[in-house]
Length: 326
Ligand code: PCA
Image 1 (tube, rainbow, N blue to C red):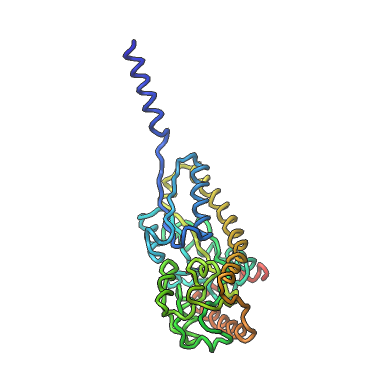
Image 2 (image 1 turned 60 degrees about the vertical axis):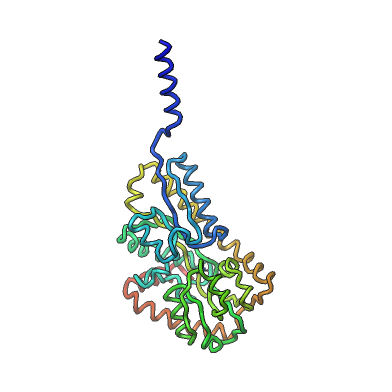
């Protein structure tokens, strides 16, 4: 009698200690610093997933390219080395022009336009990622892209001969058109690259300028608002299919909330990022009329080049975008 009750008590302890379900653990590699708003949004997403699934699905975020370099994240998730990942989608523009639609200068240069461009291009981007075994969870834009430079830039001619940090094929092409020398460096390596003193200029957001302490080497930030590139968070489809239905539904719900929160945070923090640059001594300026006109010309040329590469599919997305009213 005594023995059996002891056994029952022991069994109860085992039941309490072991979870009532098998916990699923996923890794989420990303490429930007932990205190960047994208990474904070990912951390909030992971917390929300844990809450919504009562701990059934646990996502561990690895910011700052600590698990994989930026350019390797997509393939790592494809082959299942990680289950979820966040990438700057335009890094993969070389694979497919559709991945670079959000870096065509001045095609969508405000949050409102960027939203419409995402709406118009989402089905095409989802189809392409689906063919690679990947499923989109959510997308969040960077603040508008401007020019950081050591010297004054008043016209595109002033960019000639500069050593110009780029982050993808689109930004490399801009450097080529203006006669600068492109050097491809991902954000996680940018601060160190700037410290060598070899980079004269680059285009990115106020956020990445802040993250990389651009004021240590650059003097000017021209707020050209040329495009808003997006990070996309996506999941390995087989890993998603392996979840039970309620967990899948919770994940998708939390992902939709992360997209809404991310867009809001991006837009809301843009002003703050600009103020931080100015507070640290950078000259934060609007572009001159001549620089603006020159960049718009570059933008038109790149729109043409993109359409040539993207063909009918690309034109169809642009048509939908234009119909949404810009
Ligand atoms: N920051 C990232 C991508 C776009 C941005 O604003 C970078 O500079 O690499």
